[in-house]
Length: 214
Image (cartoon, rainbow, N blue to C red; front, top):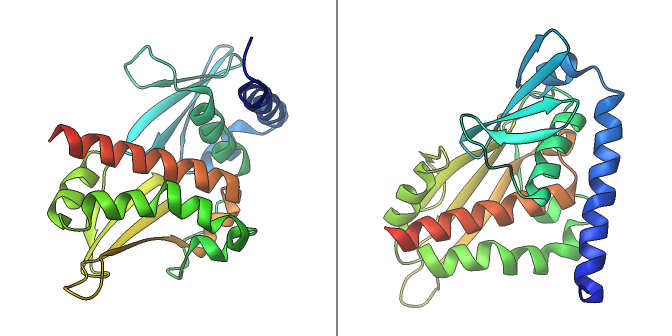
């Protein structure tokens, strides 16, 4: 038997999957593909939508709702699968504004920021704070490119319409390095705050894991 908290977590994920499944079942998939900048294909009774997620294309098949990396047979873990499906379901097609906000600026962000930073920016700072070149190199694995922000900055598309800027200040003998994650203000038209947390946690895990292999 699963521990109570783990059992509840699995239950919550199953509930979340059911909700997004019902939402997509009722949606105009071709329109949602356009709004999310994804690729819609229909042949006979089969429909697929290809969503770019952290630098890789993932194919969603309908009506069974599998989410597979293009050319691969290993489906995403349920937590990430729900994230990709929610992005497709919630997309509003809003253009980027060029105005950047922090996690604190998201709905509920002030309350959950300590947990968010512990799982994301704190870990990134510890790993890359003194090795900024390694951050740039690791970001390329998920399609990142350098930007002119902070002392070292990279931008990574969580999804095509959800850029995430990682901004690192190197610090000096008196000040410790500091990392921040910034988002375009349009992010709330694509993801809920909870989704942003999951996305940034997955991104952090991928960057740290790659850096340990290099």
